[in-house]
Length: 363
Image (cartoon, rainbow, N blue to C red):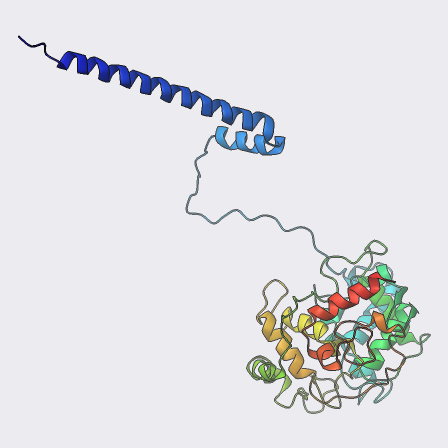
């Protein structure tokens, strides 16, 4: 009788399976050893610690899985001190007067000014420095006391607060400078310095001035800006840009953005980056620095539209004696960077900034 081959085949299959299991075990041990080597000897310790913490952490049950996420507390931000908190009665009176001069400048020096008529164009300082210079990223006075006196490239010299206030009066209010010894100037400067009290010398706290807006990679477009203006701005500032003033009132309800009673072409807001940053984070009404209404492009374009409209001229021939220190968006030559006046006004500004940085690095 022939021998049955099945038992031999089964034995061979068991032997092959055993070899396969042995090989699998060897490979598993080898991989585990390799991973251990990688973890222990080739990875940075912070990575290893974080990895170990993740795989050994125990999950905790969320007691309110459908509730709102936990909010991370905001860091402390700058806030203006209250004038009413000043304990000295005489000082408090001066500060209140200074604040009123900032808030209602036209009442004192505008077309119907009680101190002097037509010394300014009828705008108030707070039309540019919101809420008498106290709004977070509203072109406020937070850093003034801490940073003045300081060198300013526009004049090419050291400026004190009195000079800076008169610059605003001559440019933004298109007016005539005040006597620095006058009661009004003393009150305004006292108030401005009070607003920035407590800020460390040489520091500009978060929220001071105007929040910077990212640059466009194209020129700002006045034609697009006109559409934005009509949709978002003209209900207050009017279709002709001349603002709105009540019959017999001493100041504008909504200030003019161009025309004979607006800021002149030497003012800070005539630079597109300043105007765009100002409106993006403060305008139209209801906008805040942390809840803007306009997009970046809309802010740049409406700045281009407004600053393309007619306005008073200022003699700025003495400005920027070192032309290489002119800002990228200062639209009047001569220029050290080789770009045209048109590009300096509308952009794109990135190439100009890069060229100016390279020039100043060589100084």
